[in-house]
Length: 127
Image 1 (tube, helix red, strand yellow):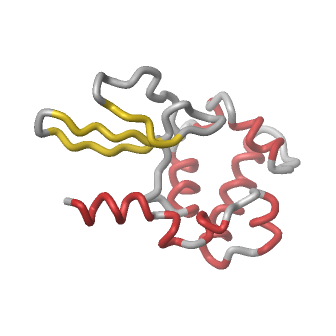
Image 2: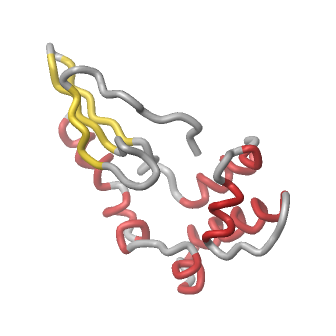
């Protein structure tokens, strides 16, 4: 959902996680009285939240929308691609149907709300 990402860390910041999408998926910066933890993804959002965001914003122009759809066997074309993904995400919020778990290659951590929001929960506990 984001169109930009951290390219260079400030001095004193530590990269905590990376993946194929982003070199810095999670960072920590604790220096001179500043204590910051940040992640590139959105652990606070549910699948339904993401679907609502897609409905309200120009996600068709995101450079990776079509590649995401192709990777996850979404057969539709054009605006129907996003409509299918949004419908699937709303369904995932309701009951995690096995066919959609397989289709989107969801990990156990994404299906378990406590695990999915672990970083956010841990950060809030430290405040």
